[in-house]
Each structure stands twice: as C-alpha cells, then as structure tokens.
Image (tube, rainbow, N blue to C red):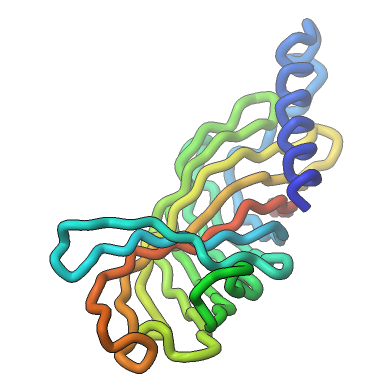
Length: 214
C-alpha cells in the first residue's frame, strides 16, 4: 500500500509538470470544474502517535506503541464553493491498531471518526489542486479494554494533500492526502491507577482516493 501511495504521488506531480511544459496545454486541456458537490472513497494506511504529559506537567514523552494491522477506509463528501474554498464532511474507519512487538500495551483500538471541516486550497487550470483541511471531529476509539477514560472524544481534524482532475474524465478527481484526528485523554483507573498523566493522541491515515464531482 505504501508503494502504491508513493507511486501515485509521483504520477500526480508528473501530470502537472507535463502540462506546464506543453506549449499547447492552455488550449488543449479542458478547464477543471471549480465548484460543485462531490463524493469520494479512499483507502490507505493508519498510524497512531501520542505525547504523554506527566501529572506535574514538567515532562513530555512521545510514544507510538500501536500499529495498523489492516487497511483504513475513508468516505468523504463536500461542496467546492469556488477555486479556493470548500466545505467537507468525512467518515474514517482507521482499521485495527494493535500493540507493536515488545510493547507494554495489551489493548487495541478500532477507531471510527466523523468530521466536518473547511477545505482551503487552490485549483490550477491544469486540474491539479493543493489543499489543507481543518475542522472538528467526533472519534470513537472502540477500545478492546478500558485503557482510556472516555471511548468517544471530540477531536481536532486536520490534513493536507493534492488532487488531480484529468481533462479526459469529466467529473472524476483523484486525491492523495494525509488526514488525522488529534484529541486529549487520560488513562483509566482500571488500566493504570498510578498514572494521572494527560495524553495528547493522534490517529491519522495517508490515503489514495477517487471522487466524482456532480
């Protein structure tokens, strides 16, 4: 999956460079659709990371003791208002995140998240769009055991990526992006009653998607 994502990124860049170098691109390539409703589906790989702030708030350590065991899936939909601004909603199934070999963790997560965000970027006449996403989400950790106090958390949703709209496929757009949900939580007393540390955790995915714009 990682090789496919890297290859896709290289193809997106080559499409843009080829179009820019062609003396005929302005007359031969159809202008991209700059507004309208769209719906898309993506798949990729997930990652988990957290910063542990001890109960005296004088020490921060970083861990990543869970790893993805299967493919993440994302469904996204939204409206491009113009060349720059859009509004997007998405549902992310991050798959199963299980302890790495040698990790002290014993529980796993199967997170799901629903997000509402603003999509800010720029659509070039060649069909390439670079963008960033920022908004809020509700994430359900779906813990295999009670590691954290709250299974459902309000999170900050953010991301960045690129899209390519081929001139030969009206309405079809390909996307390569990274998006993540960041939230704060604490360990449950059942899991570890000695630790009052705060956890700033992030679950994200690098994915390749395809969408259709109506």
